[in-house]
Picture 1 (tube, rainbow, N blue to C red):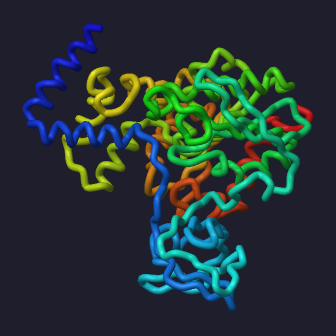
Picture 2 (cartoon, helix red, strand yellow; picture 1 turned 180 degrees about the horizontal axis):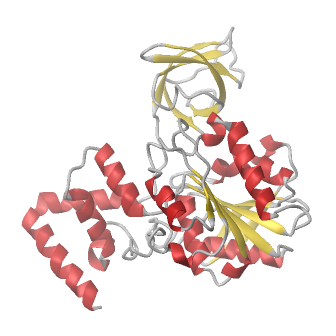
Picture 3 (cartoon, rainbow, N blue to C red; picture 1 turned 60 degrees about the vertical axis):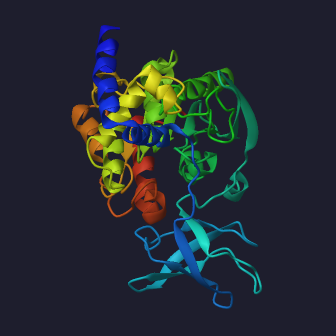
Length: 384
């Protein structure tokens, strides 16, 4: 309580000194951190050749990546799959279409380039079912892919996305004999909305994943592996240190994870052109109950508790981190720091060139091998 009063005493005079306009800016930045948003258009469709089944996009650091991807569009086709880069110049990229677009179809110019690739569980051609997990937030929908092992994988998607993000990992895990439970959590657009509808950056969402662990244990699992994507990594790490079932967590797979929010938010602020002290003030605002609520958060966010480099000694489960060194959205610095802090637990193969949560797309062979080899090294198999 004394430290909280001290923090309030330090922050509030600063906000007052900044003036109303600057204080509102700080709160606005803080609000963007916690309020759920869906990714919007991030490229332009310049041309579609329905004869050759190719598409031309505005060139970006993402659209120029080799591999298979998805493209969210508006018009006749809501979602199409993209294959190899066929040609590129300084401003455009031409790629093979893997979803056939018929002549006369209307495809609007604005589009969202995505690493998801699979948009529905049926596309994997594996047995699956819809299930509901009773969490403190309410009934959270999940997809269940059965397999032989009593070790289940619980997959946790990232910020501003849904369960479909996780589908890329199901085949390699299923091939290892591991059942997959692909879950939703509060405020993600599929699970129930909390009172304020805001993210807690893992500080509350872990309870929904903990409910998924309890569901797995009731339905035949003896232990679980948590696989978290981006913010789902932060949620999985919080589950690993807070869950009453943490002794049943046999491993962690973290794909482009948020390991320390302060590192991520400082980086993203720099990329957005926000100068000091605005990022620090925004995080300070989210750390205090009054200003956190003014920013849209339901409760103050304890960034120290979310810093898993500082809390590395609390981790007990073997951990595989898959993180491209040029992520471009969630820097890999904290992932490297966690590996250095816990070399006894953390395996982190080197990836580069793939950007954020797109290692499967960019290097499916290397990504799949990294997971398969780690599973084998830890003894996770259908007979485990």
